[in-house]
Amino acid sequence: MAKKDYYHILGIPKSAEEREIKKAYKKLAMKYHPDRNQGDKTAEGKFKEIKEAYEILINEDKRNAYDQYGHAAFENGHSSNNTYSTFTSSADFGDIFGDVFGDIFGGNRTQRAKKGADLCYNIEILLEEAVKGVTKEIRVPTLQKCKKCYGSGTKTGTKPRSCSTCHGKGQIHMRKGFFTVQQSCPTCNGRGTVIKDPCQLCRGQGRIETYKTLSIKIPPGVDTNDRIRLNNEGEPGLNGAQSGDLYVQITVKKHPIFEREENNLYCEVPINFTMAALGGEIEVPTLDGRVKLKIPYETQSGKLFRIRGRGVKSVQNRYQGDLLCRVVVETPVNLNEQQKNLLHELGNSFNGFKGEKNSPRSKRFFDGVKRFFDDLTG
Image (cartoon, rainbow, N blue to C red; front, side, top):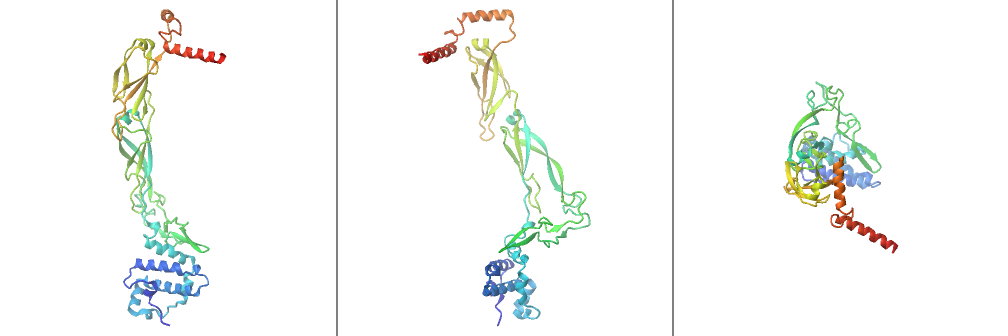
């Protein structure tokens, strides 16, 4: 019985390229493989034809011979009876998923270029630096190509050897029931090669750890947890891929005077009770120097004063925040006898601590207390 045309078996034209041949083979092999069609002799025969056609057409020399002489080119010494038996190993079945599938979608994945990992560097800056902006130099660890072995990881004069376990593919195939599972080779960790004589400097890694100094410009207005990205300053990529990015994480140190809330700054300013009662003018600090603040008479403790435009300029919309000063009336300490006598006279002039005229808040409070107890006993 005359054999079918190999191109017809795979359903491809004679002008088909290698990629098309592999794609057609994968599709048909998965459909007619005996493991998926147990007991089906027709499928088994079809699978033999597909396998035989693929092995001829994927080989350039054999394909040229077939195109010139047809099936006669392989009648001597070629036995189709061995086709199925040589394929039933788990490694061959895995090739449907591995070599063929991998070639169709970009080649052996273990050899693909891989972008380097992104790195993070934590930096702590002063509040003044965060508000006004600053340029900082940072020293970060990095991996660089070994200068002794030029990244090969091998001793001078030697080369990596093909892994005997996976035969240089970087992957092994394990048969689990119906499926064949592909996983990284445990011997070479997916590289496909092993190093027998490693470089003494990098110990076979091909890269060595070192440090590099970078100058980073921190813009004005940044705050804690803001991040600055430095492109391609992260971990170097593999197989010539680009490096990852470096993220500089900002932390602003606690300031002894100011607290920041969004774009506003807050501070507490102590004043004595004479200033609070009679009013006056004091100097308060800002990040740009001192400014004068007028305290009106009869100012109560906790009063908030706003000084516009003395806060933080937003890094996003450039909006300028304010400085808010909370005054705290301070009780005098370490009084001498004369000061105590003066305070006694002042206190007597108030007609007690519940004086209506001089202490309205005290009067309201104690009147409320009286009503509360009257309601309890009423």
